[in-house]
Image: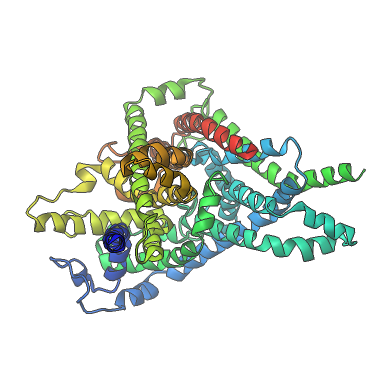
Length: 276
Length: 290
């Protein structure tokens, strides 16, 4: 009897949870469906849900007419470039903090965190003017540096929380056995650090890909990534729902997939280890 | 001997990150402070006289500023209410036993990965358009008058869009906290005859309180800087009905070329964010000791 009640409860919960999940997901689902409609079907009243003539013409149009690949390559350059630069700076720093902490380590970590809280708009004008003066406006290099700097605190923090979990005793044991510093790093530590570094990379790519303050303010066309490309649909092209949808799906699909893989790390990275 | 060696090595390893962030923080901020005391227009960059606090008094007495300040607060508080309230409910739901838990989880967190410009344009055109938008069509189909979201309730529209983007974040963090709650306590309370509601109120909610604080503080920092969603939907309008502080500073600088006033506005934004930041840094610092 009790089992039947729990079974019924489970089915009820299933219906409720799926309804809520689909409701939250609906705008993305709708964008996905609309991207396969003709422009006419996209604005038909009443809306067509599944039984319309599926077409890939919007994707073909985006491919032919707009410089979609130019923007996508910029997004890739910016997110990979800023992440690589971030790792280069953050791995040694997080390493030192985790393995030879001093009384000041905590203060430095918290100070780094506080730089993340500086609102971008507080430094928009000087950065903009500096970019103009140094000819960096609308250049990939300039944006890579800015994205690297705004995400550096998160990278250091995340790596620090992962490195701290590597037991120090292992190092000592290695030293006892006569491992050199080089062997220590390449053979003992690196294999243990790789998962942490991988999740940090993942999260940072997501953050850089979706960054939409600096990428919109410091680019016009040459270095503009997908955020700016989509922003160009705000009017009047936005009235072409099917094309907007196709462009949107192309812009979010890679990150959606990466994000689904990294949901656990997301909590850790974005709360600076405060919630694990 | 070995320790001093390790210590200086450690310092050398930290130095590049620390110096990079120090420059990134100090130089532009000092420049903003400096510009905020100048009468500096992009259209007349030759003459930049020192004007003291004039920019601040101009910016602070501008009616658009108080409107933007109020809008910023409404935006932050509105989104926080929806995401924390909704996040608790959705997290409780996802913590239940049902079929397809993992798939529903994916569906719920998906909006967080949608870039701001896409989220804003999809909502503006395909959800909220009064004629062709899904919401409008739904309202007409049940005999109600569809509303023109972006012109009639611009700020609410932006709150909805931003809340949709941040609900997954709140849910995910609250769910993580929820799942660390041991079931012993709940079972003991159940044995003592506590109802589901009082278990939630006296056991679950206090357990989640720290995660809720973290969600509120972190979201506030990001929400104070909402920009792209406003830029591609309402442009701050109609009038200044959906202009927040970030957007106002951007307008002053880029559209009006008033570097002085925009810098003063930037400094005001920094001060506001710092008030929140102090609490957050303290909270995380405490956690670091534990």
